[in-house]
Length: 399
Image (tube, rainbow, N blue to C red; front, side):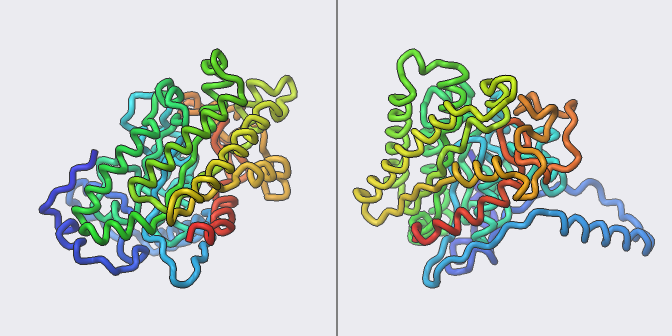
């Protein structure tokens, strides 16, 4: 939970800032403590030149996200994200779980090279969507103890690595369940009303973009790896159960005020490096059974969301296909500038993920040549390639 001091200058001033453009008014800042008061001498000119050239090189190499064009007359004041490790930006840092990554080499290519709790080498889709919409570069985790009042106004992240539509998935990780993520969102709304007033808070809640990314852990871990649900479900009945859970989540999110809701499809799980290693045979081929399971769920999710839009007044409930674009990158990786698609950059790339990808494990020298960072999560380069074009394709359906 985030304690917001009522005497905070930011909190006192923000109530009156109801019409400023969010991309110009509020940003997610990293707060650093000032160590000591010793003054340092100016480095010689040659060092300044070296620093300047190094900075230019870093800026040139840093992946950039294309801006998303929003039709005139519409605005997206904030972004809110729910789901699993694909979009978690650090909510698991203080959760007792193996599903965390707030240690090296995670975050290797993040600004400052710091591990933040993002399950990648850099930024993740949550950040990239907020950036492409011109809202802010990074989407902070709601559980961040350093969260500032101004951070809340342009959106936060509720996702938790290891979560799923199946409550059992979150219990076994363990992770912050989707139900608890919704509870956190309701608590967030009260904080927002205290900051900007009830009328402005309602405007932000109704007009913001909500993204939900879940389902991979249910299929890959709960159903296939642990086989827990195979005692009571076939893959057909299990994906029915998942779709019903997704439907219930949308209805609760809608009841809490959300109107523009996007669901990312489940990716091609059978082509993820760890699943190739575990079930792809000696040649580590893509596992058709897992891909078919993902497609089965995606079809049901798509139909469910289309139906919900017809029964929820003023809603924009959108199915966002990530399966086919990512599969195309994996199968045709050379066309997209990659050199490796069947292994991750961390360690051997075959099985390392979360605690198996740690500071004692070597990483590839150039992560931009890899589709995957660890054996389950794509690199920042892959995300950057996919996210903005995908959202641009669907943005008109949210408005």
